[in-house]
Image (tube, rainbow, N blue to C red):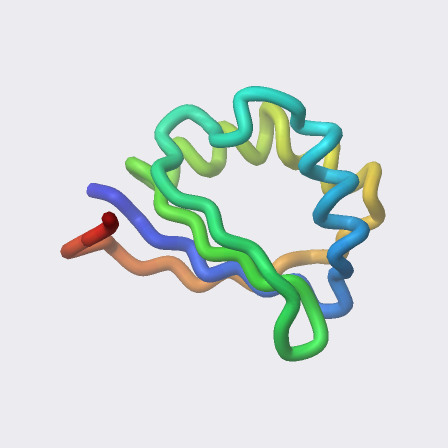
Length: 90
């Protein structure tokens, strides 16, 4: 089942986000990822992702994202996960 991850990185900056994005290169989305939204709010970086499963996200984190987060000095994220029951987009 698809999952939505609401990710908050306290103190995370847009510059760090851009550094991570550049380090990841192409493809921009990970395998099994259908949505990625990011912005600054509430004193840090906020990300909303939708993945086919939590296992897809964990693989992306271990294989590609983790090293880029560490390189950019990004702190420990707070993650809220919930199952996607419905997704509508244009």
